[in-house]
Image 1 (cartoon, rainbow, N blue to C red):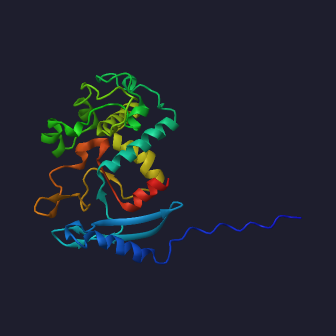
Image 2: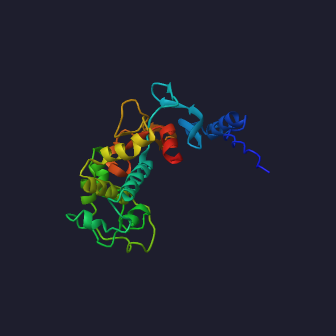
Image 3: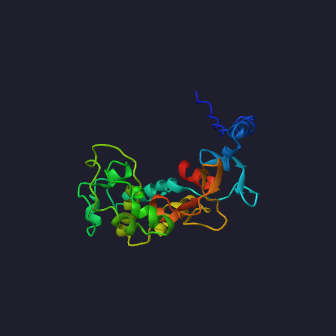
Length: 256
């Protein structure tokens, strides 16, 4: 006998009580300590579709303007994920290989030849973190810095361990990947990410560097209040932290 026709699997749906449950949960963050109220946006994705979007708190603490669902934020070290995706797309297209020695692609730096592309992607290179240096704290942190300048600041420093023998998060890995992208493609890092990641995924609210109207990060002041982090520019971190994006755009990235 013929098999019974298969019904299409229904799309995933959030429970009816989801929005209220989320609101209650987020409100709890500032219940006992108002300083820790959530200021941001939420986007929930399933099967590549945005099922829920919601905004919290203020975009401008001084002006009192509320957040909107498509507001952009300086996403800090989440920028590393954009860098990783661009590199992996170069691997897929054959321009790079995970086992490549980074030094062969960037011969004018004092890089250890044993550091591979995969070591940088997996934070197992042993490179010291450039953000912990006095040069970054006093100079680069407040200025736009290109990836080559950042790599130059640590390329000759001793490794913290032999590549592949340990794991230690270090933003130097992403900065070096940013320079690698530029060397392999002969194009600016941000342009490559735009062409290989943002445009294919329709990430329309993602831009490189500080953007007018975007929410900046907040730091906790010792007097128990939040204050905008305006003394540091996101592009001071190059490929390790230079991007501004929205919750919906990041949902598209992670869904893909």
